[in-house]
Length: 379
Image (cartoon, rainbow, N blue to C red; front, side):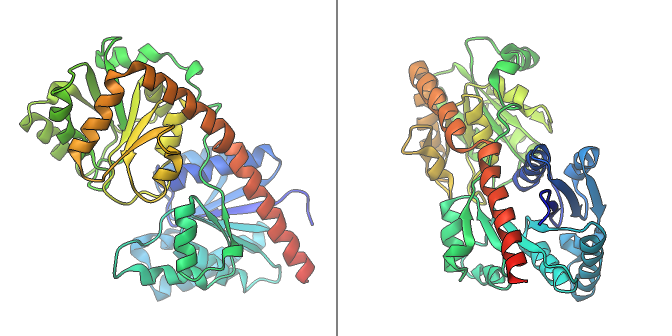
């Protein structure tokens, strides 16, 4: 077997979100270890950044809105061509439809290709969980981003010995508070040095719960006025959230940044991170990035998030869609500076022990090599 692997990172679309950024961070770390990475997708905002560092092959028919029998056949043929021309050793898929299509393509080439799949999101809505049966249709090694995800895969019928808990990882060189000027972003938004900054990062939509966070502000104000909420991101609910802040009379306590790429710089300025999601989370990168910067957090008790909390050592959990519970936990951290400091120190320690991109890629690289070796042994 070649000492250097050639890995195909595949997703229907590489957006600027957890699955997208994590794919890129994995590729960067594998590159540092001497492996080659090729990307393939229908595009997406993150594809522009990927192209600056790696080869990206466009497959427009992989787009979610183009799925169908004809596009599936086209995708199989295009991926087949990539597997042959790029001499791919390992396919690393990042969504089920694209990974299953790549598996079908791999059956049409002479060389055996290892199939791996990072599973971050699964269907949890009642009446729709039959969609998870697709994970039983191809012999992949599954990388579960949380124990919650692993248990969902098991319930979907995937053998437990095919599932590896790898979690998500943070580039601690990039997310290192000592590399940033804490006052830079504070000065930009006119925040005083003694103002406690509470931040949330993500697409502004219903799932991420920015409306819940804004509705919590009047409850926090009953206890302390010494804070400001920073909402980072763009999305379909941005104007709704801006209007809600005005309607509640709390606009002076909220700052909307819109879409930003300088997330580490913003995280460095924060005192508390929060994620008030009402659904749709598995193991959020944004919480891990906040922890790497020493920020304690408050987040909804959803999916894999309680695993990161470690019984309140790193973060506080709240009931989803409960603005009073959210206000109570945030107020606790706003008022108690010592608690913020202690939890922040715990956060950095936990990241360095469990959630660096290097430690995550140790597990992933081992499985890449193990899967490739097994194929060779099988002949």
